[in-house]
Length: 403
Image (tube, rainbow, N blue to C red; front, side, top):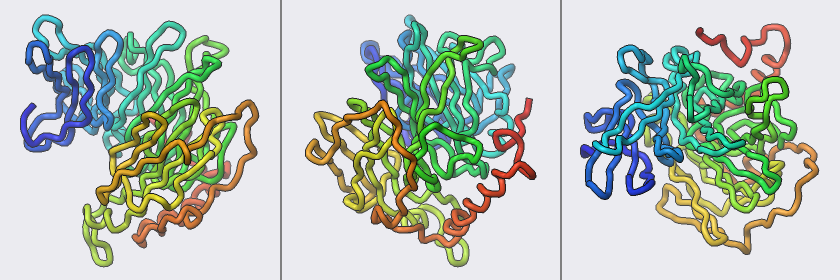
């Protein structure tokens, strides 16, 4: 690929390396890229508008189709412009070129474009009752469930299922879902889908099990079940974790969900009197990461790293191998938590009683230094109380969609 671009994670499948680029860095177009190891041929495909942001790499289906969402951009498929869409491309077996296979664009793509609520996650693929599905999300903060045989139906605008808004009632482009979703299947055969999110949960979103007020972010878990009327698969909320300071992608091992709050400030502002702004401002406002182990079926906190991690994490994620969990931080440290400190899942048929989320101080983390950030967060309980009332409530799911 051209130099000075911004490639995201590499995924190697059947002798082909796949990646994607966003932001037009180095003057390069935003593309899917493939590199065939046997022939050394490069393939690429451009959505024509919008970057491709899957943090842990593009997903690859069982037939070799490569999937990623395109970021803020125009959606004009008649002109082969596929911004603000979820796209599948596939390598031509003869030429090794990447070619468009299918796509899905949300019905409110224009709204998402205007508000900078673009697709920006890696999307796990799984089988459910003999069919292959993929789930994705965006800063808008809902999940789309798509059948890989037809991502958006005949009109490319109809997914298999979409959830209501999980968070981002404020319509803030620094909140919502960032990073990657996760999926696993338990011993009883139940398929689970998990998503991290930033900011408080939507006041109209509820799960049967919730672990206290969510202010900074959390992990939400869903079960894949068939709708009683239509028989089609849907995502049903199961639990919401405790509060986490900017929750980032979870990883599941042996029925335990390992998740973490990155501790990073996500404020995006220019410098102004009393505020440094830019990347330096974000560095100074950031706190430290906290790693959590959660019961996979209930979201109950089994263990946390507390204040053992001294710095914050930016977009690198967790790794798990041989009974150890690894996380890197901004100060150049790599932390490893081993079997002696990690929990063994025991439980789970009964849901635990809901509890209040521990305060930031109880984890040893610092409160945000930015006065603006503290002010906005201080208003959230008041906003939640106001919007929870029947009179003066916002439109359904927080906004009216454009159709």
